[in-house]
Each structure stands twice: as C-alpha cells, then as structure tokens.
Length: 517
Image (tube, rainbow, N blue to C red; front, side, top):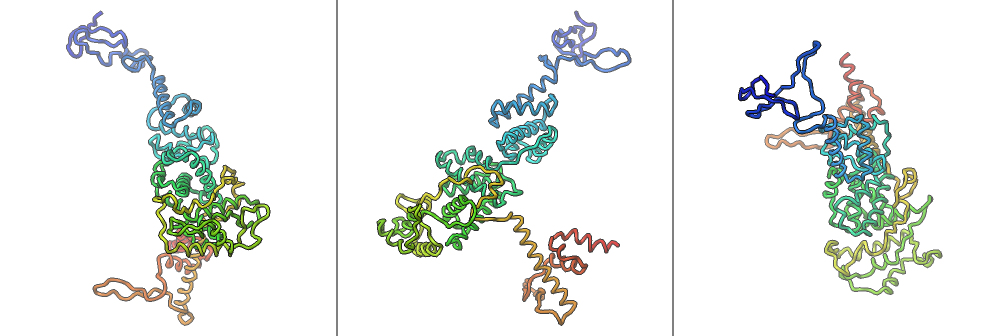
C-alpha cells in the first residue's frame, strides 16, 4: 500500500514499507526515508522508539551480543599469538568475564585488560611470562599494562607469587631464536650452568631491586660465550627478550665483576680481570661448583689436575711447540708435587697446595708469554683449546637445579657479597665523611689562621689575555657539595645527618627556615 507522503528525493507519492527494517522506501527511486520510525508522543513522553532486535541493515543481533562476539574473537586472536593452550585460554576468558561482569568491552583498554589477565593466569601457574613480552604482543605501554594488572589483582583479591627468575631463564633458553640452532645436549649443559649462575646472582643480591629479564639476558650471553657459541650476541638477546641493551650490558658487567671477585682466592687470582675472566671462567666455575658441594667448614680446593698440568706444561702444536709424550709431561710436572699428595680414597685426584699450583701457573705463563694465541674463532684441529683441557663442569651440584631462596642463601659458592646498592651507599658515605673533615679544616683555618696546616683550598691563576685556562696549583678543587657541607656545618647540623646526603631536606630545615623567620 502506497503512502500519501511524498518521497524526499523524487517527490512522488510512491512510498512503501520495507519488509526487513520497517522503514519507508520509495518504489520509484528506491530511496529509504531517514528517521521514518518516529512515533507520536503519547502520555507526555517524547523521543524515538528504538526497535530492539536490530543493529543495522541485514543483521538480527542485538548490540550486547555483537559486542561479546567481537570481544571473544579478539581474545582468541591474542591467545593464538601467545600460544596458550585451550585450558589457559578458557581461564583467561573466565577471568575477563569475572572482571567485566559478563559485559566484556571494546577499544584499546580491552586489549590491555586481555594482556593483564593473560599475565595473571600464567603468573598464578608459576609459568613466568615477562611483562615486557606481553606488552609488546598487545602493543601497549609496559606501565599501562602494569597498572591494569594491579587493578585486576586488587579487584579479584589475588596474591601473585614471586617472580621466578629461574623459570624465566629456562623459558628464554628454549624459546628465543638465538639458541634454536644449538645442539640439544649443549643447550642442556648451558641451561645447568645458567641456572647455577642465576642462583649465584640471587645469593650475591645482584637481582635484588632490579628488573629480572636484563639479568637473564646477561646470563644467557655469558653461558653462550663460555661454551663458545659465538653466534649469540647481547644485542640480539636483548631485542628478543624486549629489554634495553644498556641495562643488559650493565648486568653483564656486574656478573663479570662478581666472578673476578671469586677468582681472587685462586693462586693466580691477582692476574684475573674483567677482560680475561672468560679464559679463566672454567676454573672459576669448577671452583664454585666444588664449593657448593660442601656442607660448611673450610675445604681444600681439590681438582683433577693430572691432565691440566700435562697440557699446560706440554709444548702444543697450536702454539708452535714440539710435541712431548705423556711420560715426559708427567716427569716434568711431578717435581711440583709432594710425595704424599695423592689421597687414598681418590688416587686419580691431587690435593695441591697453593704454593705448588702458583709455581705451575707461573711456569705456564712464562712459557706462552711470547707466543701469539690463535684466534678461537679460527681454531683448527690440533690447536690448544683453553676450555678443552679437562671436563670442568659436572652439573651435579644442587645449585644447577631450582632451589628455594633459603637454601640458596645457605650455600657456599666461594663468595659472600653484599648488594651493589649497599656497597655504593657505603662508598658514598665514606666520601662524604672525607668531605666533612676537609670542610671542618677549612672552616678552622679561616677562624684560626695560625692553627691551620697546609693549604687545601684551590688557588687559580688570573685569566690570561689569550688563553682562558685555569691552572690548579695545589690542593683539591672545591665543588658545590663542599660548599653545602660547609654551610650545614656552620648552621650546627650534626655530622651523622650530613653523612646521609639528604642536602635539600637539611637546607630547608636548618638554613632556609631561619631565613624565612
């Protein structure tokens, strides 16, 4: 039945109702009349009557069902990217449904919510997924994701377990592309060494207050270099773990510094530095592993040195020596051992005193000091390999397996270190104490010129016409910190408070407060 109203386009009175939507459509030109569903006001209420059951032309879904449908598709897409199992995916959906009260959502915030729920589910299952990896997958900011995780945890009243850095290391070892080409037996060996080192870093408080993934990256690079996997670079590992390269290098440097401290107990420890620690790392790792076997008390450093001494004192082809036979090697090295150095229970192992081992190492150093070492990357068959002279890693220590924190702290690995932040704070406090003493001497010299000693003040020459350089004749240069310390001392501030270094608070409390009065 045609309507008596005219079409808005062709102005013909040929309007008929559409079968699906109920809107009026012109039979002549096919134009749909907009806002044709207006209803007459009844009962004093005006407005539009929204027809439920439709959300556009050609669909019969309501808005809520459509929103839930697209939200679940988005969740499935992200679960596929994270390689979640169907069980874990269902747990994520249930958590999202609980948080949103079954309403789900749309927009960027909903993607962040999916990432937060995914991280919480994996964290509760003791499967550590780095938050930076989740943020990179969901294309959101790390801090934004962290705030969303905190809100979800608070809403559902959960208590997340501590981040397990050992699990994070094992997961990174088997997942990042840098180690996919490495043989399975070598990966297993490096995994044991890496777990050992990670737990040593926990004992040495290197991980305390730090982001865990840069520590994981540093250990991955070190064990790769230790086992001569030259293809693994710290830049690639940092990119694959989504962490900052500079932070990874800093953690790597701290790891090397700790190993150098451990090496100081060895007879040749004074020669070990950060630059050559990789060459001495097998001996250091063997020493740490053997120390971890001990149950307390002091034990002598027992190692299988029969092959070590033979290789060190032999003339190898790779270094340009003539080859000696084993009898000559044993005869040349037997003069360094005492007659009763062989233990009864282990006749194949030696107990060498530090003096004998130092003498052996000194002769070895003198023998190769004038010889060019071959490039390890171009090492040929028959050349000397510093890492291949003995099987220095057994992997039987308890530190090579995951341990709880209490047991880790009770283990002895050859070094009891304090947190790096504590060491820096002690060093800064000692420097401030020296500055306080120097400031008191300067104040005393000004107040009592005759009782003063040498000149500690900085004396500068007048500026010359052409060269505007200042020459310091004697003493130390006074910085802004020295002037602040002098000011605080003149205002009778206690030295114990100045040593803490809270200069702004002390100035506000003791100096500027009196000025305002």
